[in-house]
Structure formats: C-alpha cells, structure tokens
Length: 375
Image (cartoon, rainbow, N blue to C red):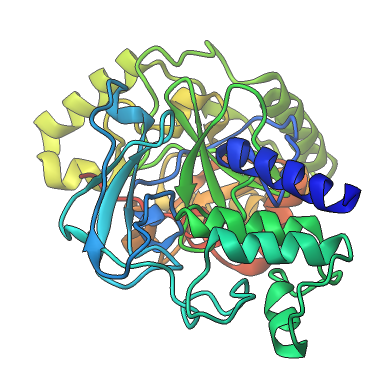
C-alpha cells in the first residue's frame, strides 16, 4: 500500500510540474559563443502543444495570452504528430494557437514507437501511470511486449524517467526538452536536434559545447546588445593566435573588430547606396545581424579575396581552429551562410567547437542545422 501511495504522489508531482521537467539536462558552459538560431529551424523539431483526448477532435485552446511574441515558439510538423500541422505556443504560459490546421490528432503508437504501455494505440497519462508502477516494481500485469514499450528511452530499463517522458508526450510536449541555465528561455530546436534558447533578445544554440550565440541573417541581435569591444575570451584567443603566427614569421592583426549596431547601420547603408541592396547583402550584414556586434568576430589583415592565397591567409585557414576560431564564411558556402567567401573574417566559438566545425568541413549553419536568410 505504501508503494501505491508513493507512486500516486510521484505521478501527481509529475503532472503538476511537467512543463518544467526536463529529461536531458544541458549544463551551461561559460564560453561566449554567439549566434542566434532561427524561427524556421524549429519547424523541424518537436514543440509543446495541447492535444485533445479524442482523435481528430477540434483544438481546445486557452482563452488568451498577454505575453510578447518573442516569448512564442512557432512550430511545424512536430516529431510526434501528424504532418502538416502548424501552431504557435507561448513558452511562458503554454497558450497554444493553431495557425493553419484547426484539428489536432492524438499521439499515435506508430509516431511514438515507445511509451504506449497499454498498447491502445496512443500515449496517454495512463501509460505514464503503468510505467511508473513498473519502475517501482508494482506489476500491472503487462506482458513482455508491453514492458518493452514501457522502456520509453530504450536504455537503463524501466525507470521513473520513462514515466516522465510518456507523461510529457501525452500532453503534447517534447519529452526531452533540456533544462536551461537561469535567464534562458527555450525557443525550440534546430533541424539537427540542438535546443535553441533566448536570453535578453539574443538566440543561442545549446549543445555540449556550451551556449553558442548566433548572429546571422535569420537571427538578429537587439540594438541594445553592446559589449563595447571584443570579449575578453576572444581577445585572449586572438593574442594566442597572433603569437602562434609570429613564431612562424607571420603577422596576424585586426583591421576591424567590434562594431556597434549604429556603426553597422552606417556601413550597410553606405554600401547599399554604392552597390545596391541585393549586392550589399552578399558581403555586408544589415544592422543587428552582424557578428561584429557580438564582440566575438573580427576581420584580419586584408579584406580582400586574395588574402586566402597569402602565406598568412593559408596559415589562418589551417590553424585558426586551434585557437578557438573558425573561418566563418567559407568557400562555396554562400548559399548557406548568405555571404561571399571571406577568408579574413574569423569568429570565436571556443577551441572544442572550432575543432569540431573545422574537422567537419561544415559552416556553422550546417553544423548546427540552422538557417541564414532574411525574412
């Protein structure tokens, strides 16, 4: 009897706090990596939502929401839902608003292959209860196949975590939403499954490499974001890079570092006046979309394509990652980054991430599964 009440208490706690429970915790890593993720990428990912208890029934929505749009997450075709549905979800209060399809279907076993412990064709709170009872050795008479379904994450046997995952799925939530550092708000997922987080209007990709700030054509920085100079981490890494180059008889120096929002606006407008908007967009960022504003990026030596063929340019391409930098806008990547090849533009992302990106041969957008395109 004690076990039964314990199970009931645990399930009650899970139900009351499911919106804040996370299965995969991503500890914050204090490295200033900046790039903000897109509102299009989450379209590939799981999202929060409200599902009715009957299949093909009309969406039941909360009456209203007063939060700002930046607190909302726009989703499309959630991982555990039928294709074609779109909705937007307030990340603060959970208010859900259908955008195009007025009907939502309950989770089906074929869309969520595990978690359907009672084998009734959908994942519900009842499944979470069965799984929880099994996790504390209260046998519900489930057969071997049902017990296999009960192991939601298919590892470590049947545990309370499996019940938590099933419960989250039963109410339309992503079972594996990460726990974020204080001050960060969950903003969906990239097409490669990395979590997106926002803090003070800035978007970050959350991964084992830390919180990577994103500033590209899709993700902007607010005009108030103003570190005032290159960050201390970026400066230290640049100093180490310069020493490394010096040992080999070369000089790497900064010709353009931090730029404020207004400085970038002035530059961009001047380029538009000279070359037109279409051409200017291939080599200059619109205000709020420049990595220079982040304090994590800089241009070195010569802002010319010929720099790639100089001794310094070749050394930088082969060694920048050893110091935590990447050549941000690589060769043959214009259709992905949105910018022409810039062998002089380096971005600080930290040694581990820089090495991983370099070895992959991908640009940052490809690596994380984000877009870079003006809306």
